Length: 235
Image (cartoon, rainbow, N blue to C red; front, side, top):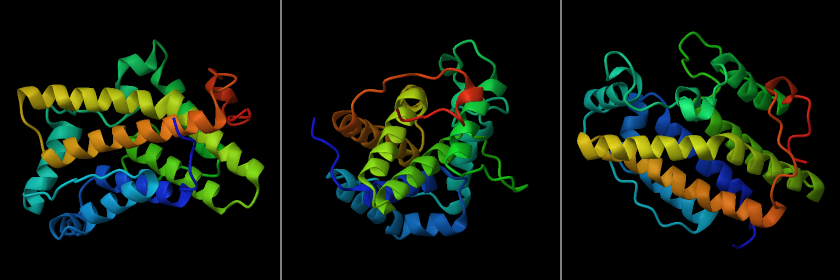
């Protein structure tokens, strides 16, 4: 495994773009898909961050069909419930017998620790464990890594990314991709959303390997969500 190169700014952009792909569709974003701007930006970010050559593809659906695909797949396509869950807490394997409120508190602790908070706008419907919130946290951590002039702080932000990957994001993303592939084998789903998810998993897997080679394995694990905001998360 090669160590993490100096690509924090590119990684931040990659996480921002991946998050944008999982947000509830807007007509503006659909235009960026249709004219190829979003696929091109994502391909360039993946190449700059990881040397990945990806082709995410354009959506062939018009906006109303594209939005309907998103709603059907991620919001209310199966008796009013998502076919594929974008919230980590909807995967029983990740709750591991714990309660949903405690699970959400752990995510909120991460955001609070790094000066972030989830959107409280009435139109926002993302819970703290939503994939968009998680990707935005990673974009923020890599932004902080890219702007610090302190080698010690840079290492701290890299450790924070490693911990968040290992404890939360990577396990959730594996389950998400597996669920999408399983559903696609029965009832074909939007190629765009399937490719977006598999590309996210591939990119995160590469970054996680680089982080582990650079800063090593975590030396401790904190299970109590009440301690997340005060503990040194990257020790």
